[in-house]
Length: 557
Figure (cartoon, rainbow, N blue to C red):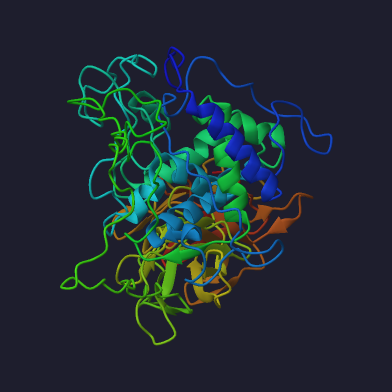
């Protein structure tokens, strides 16, 4: 968690009005009432109460725009509407994919949190207007930095620089950064690399959305419990007005949303990081200057007409302009194999192939920025790199998404890797993967001492062998040991040296043996019966490597 910060020093008088508007909007949309404690259905809140020492955004400014009173859909219907409907319900494609990917990732690693992607959308709306209406590149990084006001104690907390200006460009004070508005010290603790590019970037919507989700789920919160939900939101910005605004957007998005192309989302009109110093803003002066007040219209002078002047004959009124129609974003309709070959691996090793799929629309064109889930199904201990059996990957601009590297376990046989689109009813694509047993191409006895025993006694020396494969140690390789009849007949002998089972009965063939981590196998004790002579022990590994060892039984001299 971030270091201790001072509380926000002051807040504009408009915040009271904002709270009233938010509560009114919540009432109109039948959102749950805003409470400060207690739980739902008798559940108790987990985690601590709202901390006094800090917040994710440093209690920086936020946008106070409220959703329309007419919700975009009716309760009980789909929450994934097509690219039509109220403009405020549209969420840019990359931003929406990031929220849904974060939801799926956390559902896999922390299912008890019950994080809905709509909560991330609500916070993203008030913090940055959904990353400036989706102005991000193909990787989900904002085209230009989104910075909150300088936290220098003027209107906000006084937070000295913690990142040497690495994220916010300010080496004196901190500023909230990126589409989810993390202050650098909080990002240092909660930052994530959700798009697997090797960086934890607060300006990347995928990284920031996952970080926000994990931050909201802290302290073992169950966000399906109302009190925990309130605590989580207030831990982001310690303001009851902020809580009311986020809850209003949460309810709005739960009742319906749709995807719009990146860069076409509705921008906030009220004050906030995108519009600092505007009317009603509690922000202090913007860097490099102060906000200009809105000029007050001067009253008309006596005798002046207050009626608008009629247009001149030479200047006919211009007809109203009609905005060009918005082209709906392409929607993924199916997944196709994008060149995945045969999936074979030896137990304990990585598969050479990675499962890769391609999202397409109804016309077969690639659809990028689609959240694809890869799931390992079947009786297997194989896992993806990182240790999980589920992974969510966002497809690139060419529509392809590749699963993480697949690691075989020790269990041999077949299993399935299933690819599906997150939160859409698109047919899944199944891939069959096969794990074969470990093999060795060579096996030798580690010693050369003659193995002898008297009739009816135990061989004093044990038999030890070492297996290799392509010159490397062959760990965990299955081995079979058999007392054979002769060099020309590898069937089990009916007399001579033998092993013993748990009841002490003779055994002349052993299976289920495996080499250790050094590729070595020490056989169980060997016993002689009354037969004398030279006998043969054959050791064979998975992969066909063999070695034959002589055992001599003779009466003492």
